[in-house]
Length: 207
Image (tube, rainbow, N blue to C red; front, side, top):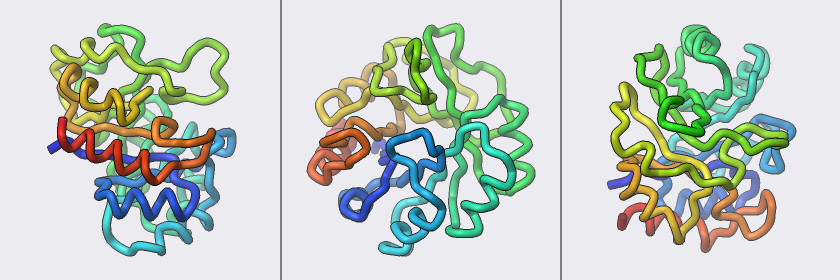
């Protein structure tokens, strides 16, 4: 069964919906430039609404050790999702002793990672479009067929441009065992829609 991460949760309605619908991971964005950003205190308050349940993922873009430490001081995180070079990802994993997923932006098959890295997984998504102010999929879909023949050396999650309407097709085309969504389950920029969260998870499970 396909596993699902709901990322960019920043209010009670969205967080509660992700938990109720059975998300495997819930993601908090610790990147101030994002419309989905939360402070460590805000993330802690949301997480405390449902102790247990989905694993908590903290998303960081080029963080310092103090940035990560501040988040961990406020709430336990199960996974660190990082937009950093491979060597920095390995350093963070060693420093904090937590699983690390490195985000990988891809424009073609040649950019898919082939060697083993000292991380625990990849988040595979399109490269940001020209002029983008944030990393990540930016609501753009990857060419899913690129991944069908990829001999991945680590577990990976498909992200970028996924919605309740296309996630099943994406899973089948890419052979993804896990998917990650943020803007695709929003009714307005940065505002999650509980009905879309439920529909996304149901579609992914049924794929």
